Length: 370
Image 1 (tube, helix red, strand yellow):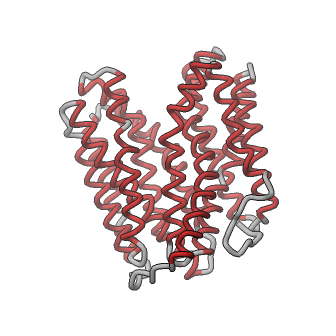
Image 2 (cartoon, helix red, strand yellow):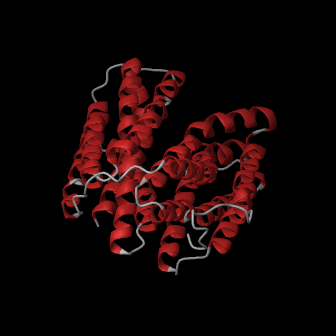
Image 3 (cartoon, helix red, strand yellow):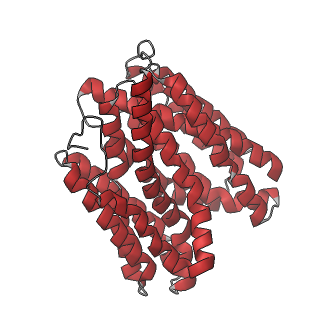
């Protein structure tokens, strides 16, 4: 399906980019601190772009998604020609904006497709991203071992992203932009977006922490070999994907089941991973975290799309939740300096516990499905 193809191409870049970072650092001759500063430009560019994209893209989903993916492909291709760290930061700022716009466009297009087809799509579409990341990282490592440089790899990835736009012609073109909601409705929608977005942000803080810190935890604090430690993000992503595919295969779960299972499972999993002194048990903890929390973000977006045909709720929830990616590195770094990395990761389990609360609002109509 076209939406799955675009999401997979998007994930292909991010999986490849993480594996290219050592080569980028060497090619530019920059320090780890300079590279980290440049990488921080991605969320700086993404957040304002997401805020603007939702306002412009509603009612124009297919064209917006095609344009965003094409712009993202162009940014990816240009990265390989950046000659210095300051210019890399500027390029990543622009790429972050394109990625943020693509995020909003993809969620709006998926929400529209769900409403018009009557089929559940968010779980499958969002499952494509981690699968692509899992495949792209080792494939990029293989390409580097065969002598391909940063420019060649990024050019190939950009071509894949650009080609992924072609199947979008099969989607409905979209109609006129939706009629703006009345002031009272708009305030209610954004209030709900803040609640649901905050829940999703907590989940994304945990996800980002696993991606960035799990290898360091196992290698530096649990004595794992580099090979075994490097499996931690892949284990998490594989479990995340399995959770989303399982949620797609099962009947739509009631909120009173989905939320507590996600909250308790996610909290227990990350706590187990952080506090266990055994490498195998820690890996099992990361897997449990991904399996429990994986279905939640697509379920919340699907519910948002069903509750608000104008797309405002999907736009708001997507934008608010992205702050989780911004906050996560600073939060884990601060907690690690205070209580150490193992306890810091375990403490992130507290962010999943609000999902257990019965008072969580799931939709304007108070429905029981997500």
